[in-house]
Image (cartoon, rainbow, N blue to C red; front, side, top):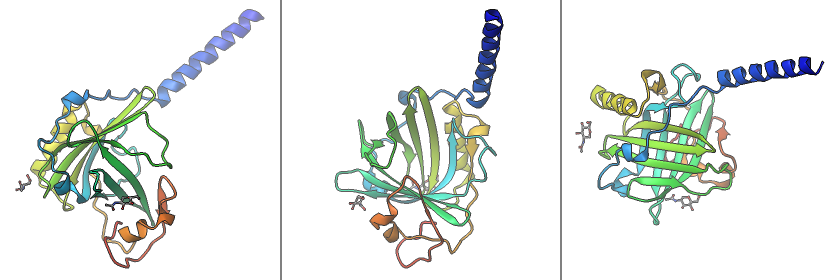
Length: 229
Ligand SMILES: *[C@@H]1O[C@H](CO)[C@@H](O)[C@H](O)[C@H]1NC(C)=O
Ligand SMILES: *[C@@H]1O[C@H](CO)[C@@H](O)[C@H](O)[C@H]1NC(C)=O
């Protein structure tokens, strides 16, 4: 009887283990930061402004795994203390999903950590590193986030316009591969068609919009300012 229970217990344990393996695929390990290039002589004032997300690669991304990625845009606004207010907006169906973060300079120019915002669950560590940019056309940025022993990393290709030359896209793919990622982990979101669904930055800076980690906005017609979605 006792033996029977033990056997049952062991087979249950094995089932649970194999399920756990099925649902948590091993992540490609994050490269050491020393292997991630840093834009020399980073100019934070020239980097600010609006960037379109042209490419995205990361160890938690899988092509076709998520429902279609729409292109999003991110606005970096430089504060006097050299931190950035970073506002990202993504059009999902009828909604404009907005995320606001603060990037605080750390260690060396071009490297940042996440500033405290009460609505965020604190990651144990969050590193942002500007890999390369020429400020007027493209930028590649590396992000690493640690929770316990789970490390997610991703890299983005930003453009000042919605299109970048094939040569720049290819160098982004090469960079992603140098981090150990494969073609399966690299996504080029589709440009969103111009849409009346817009929310302006001024509206966003209204404190009532900044209550959640991610806020969903109904379609809002632009009043003035920079349309985000
Ligand atoms: C950044 O956000 C803070 C707090 O929300 C605000 O006080 C500040 O004016 C913003 N900075 C810029 C440059 O917009
Ligand atoms: C920035 O990069 C793009 C793409 O490689 C290039 O066409 C452009 O001339 C560069 N601009 C500057 C100012 O270096």
